[in-house]
Image (cartoon, rainbow, N blue to C red; front, side, top):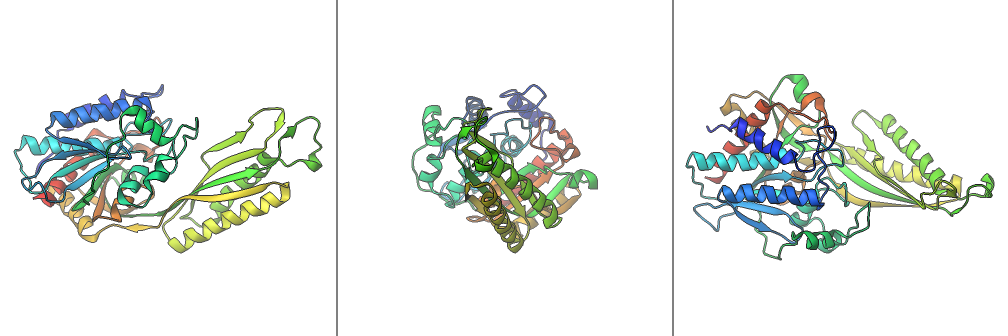
Length: 407
């Protein structure tokens, strides 16, 4: 067994957190923003110092490879993402990337050679806070999302295209033949309260619940707020507000496993004295059961149509991304279980409520995840926090997984 250097891992996390630091102790590194680019370059520098070879693919995913003794063998891969929510935390995603780097540093210190190369990957645009859909870089890599479609996605705030931002920042890598990994492991904070409440340091993740990302566009007619009678208005915001209220209420009523979130709203022309002519909003829908997830999405579509008819507007509901519930590879899950037990860490087997890049990788390679607790289960929040001891324990499990699988 090899064990992570707790202080070194913590110092790397805290140094990365200085890039895009927010007023209340969080992080803001939106995908392909200047701060995200600084974070990527810091990661690349650290990896090169650890002897890794760097590759960047056309969607901007960064691969740091520790060579194996058999160079043509498929890599054992780990990773996560460096981009954050607008008011995100210091550990979501970045922990999985830097835990992978810590594993490389540990293998180097102990002089452990592996037959298979080991790749640590920083996936592009996992969060989907600037460009939709989220988990984009891993989806393009896995072939579940078309590269041309991804490159043409507009920024939700400015309209600039993702492909143009890749070119601007120098992260538009060349086309090259993809070799799928032997296996993929992702370390991550839990982003929920289960491990902390159980008093356990490690989560052995068996799968991920299903997700739909919907984009709803409500079209009315712009006119003067003071002169247009209520009876003849085609108020896109009025219709959207009625939809949103009904959608969220239905999520509460559906069942205890349903998760429904409206997290982004954009209004046009967004002027106080003009009746809105167009409103776009997102709906994030999640459930561990695929039939229930599909029923829930169908219910939301029906709600939108019903509320539109009442307001004289029109509506379009578009599915931006769809992920069926995923069960991770049984052999990889068993490896995580064995690595935790060998290190003497008690663990809990659990399903992830959040989506992760591991979902996309599970379509093309045997995959599993390692969770560690986060304080109060809080994530996507500046106050997101984690215990350095737990973070090091998760990195130790990851390092031994990689070493064992890559031998």
